[in-house]
Image: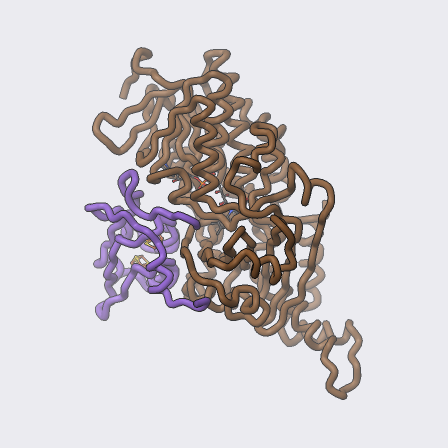
Length: 442
Length: 95
Ligand SMILES: Cc1cc2nc3c(=O)[nH]c(=O)nc-3n(C[C@H](O)[C@H](O)[C@H](O)COP(=O)(O)OP(=O)(O)OC[C@H]3O[C@@H](n4cnc5c(N)ncnc54)[C@H](O)[C@@H]3O)c2cc1C
Ligand code: SF4
Ligand code: SF4
């Protein structure tokens, strides 16, 4: 396929109107570039699922000051609660912060509902001058002499030309694969999230979760909650609903022959969770993949005429304590837009010129964070960390607090007995402790 | 109600069904080559129905377009997978 310069219509073509794509389109349009934002959904967000706590408030605040005053946000998160579970017990770590940046502007995180939030964000890109086209599937990139010169959309005369293409098409990114930038994934690198939004009266939400005003809480769960599937669960408060879900690594779902929606029912029935969801009514069920291996699944980030950002580049930090994708999606989208703006100024869209993208990604702490946590996913998203140890903690507490006339047990012998019961070897425990430290401490 | 069956869950999701399937399953491969039938368990929409002869009955109409089956399937060529045409398929309102 050849492209003549006269057909070249857009400066930037952004594929996918999730947080990565809309942020990229917004910034590029503000710089005066001619930007096309393509989305296959009926509206932006129609296909998208997150927990969701959006931790990119400060980032977005730089683009749109006090953005939360006009955006469809649910609650700001000033409490986080991490629970370690056995089938009958939960041991929780409860973090509350009413202080700077959590319960005050620019806030640390907001719960959002993606179909509403994404739609709003894409509208901001439009307001900045980007052309948004929805209900359009991009099937391939267009090439001229090996260089990417546009995209092919699934319709008559579906060739659209642009100086640079930014692929923000999410976890399955067919575009990055078609352009030869990404390989096929392994089953252990992806997790499936199944989720429910359940309606609940705001007054009940406030009472039940001890919240005032627009305070919100994010619960995360590890341990027996996913039975023996590697993964975890979450429950977040919205205005008049809760978002709750279970996440399971595909390879272990396959191995254990577990149905994800049955795990979800098990989660809601757990004695520590059932009282939280009591009286709620299902509004919508959903499912989506999560790229979980971070650094290990990073594609080639750019080639002549094209860059990859967001989930499409594996920029989702899913490692035990963290499930952060929207903020990194936005940061990487912005980094790609900054690179595109420079490329347009210089009139050079070669891979050499687009190499600046890596520098921008470091400046925005994307590549640096993913490098720092490169050891975490492979280790943390495994059986011992996600299933066994959380259960060990929960079971140990069960015994520690039990008063039944038998002699009181001290912690170490008790923990030793529990590790034996769960068939954990002391040497393994020590090696794992070292790995945890290497993943999170330095 | 808090606890729901899979059918009740699926009834809350809106799908705009396209005229042609975006996913097709080659049941011959399922029948003769597959030992896991992983798709039957992992699909969050429960769209893969195992048949007595080892084959698979598949209906694309209420698919989340998540990609799980495509990743979980261990037989080359058993699943042909793409996105539905623009505007069709799953349309979340709350997600
Ligand atoms: C269950 C679950 C819970 C999560 N919880 C959180 C959380 O609490 N906080 C957090 O920060 N992250 C969370 N994540 C991760 C987060 O959802 C992702 O990291 C984030 O959505 C990535 O944004 P993106 O813009 O890169 O991709 P996406 O949001 O996936 O957007 C991609 C867009 O591209 C469109 N598209 C794809 N292909 C094409 C095509 N060929 N043509 C046209 N359009 C196309 C899609 O329709 C979509 O709109 C969660 C994920 C899941 C599944
Ligand atoms: S996993 Fe693949 S090959 Fe096996 S039954 Fe399912 S679709 Fe067929
Ligand atoms: S894409 Fe997801 S929902 Fe659709 S058939 Fe495959 S596993 Fe099921």
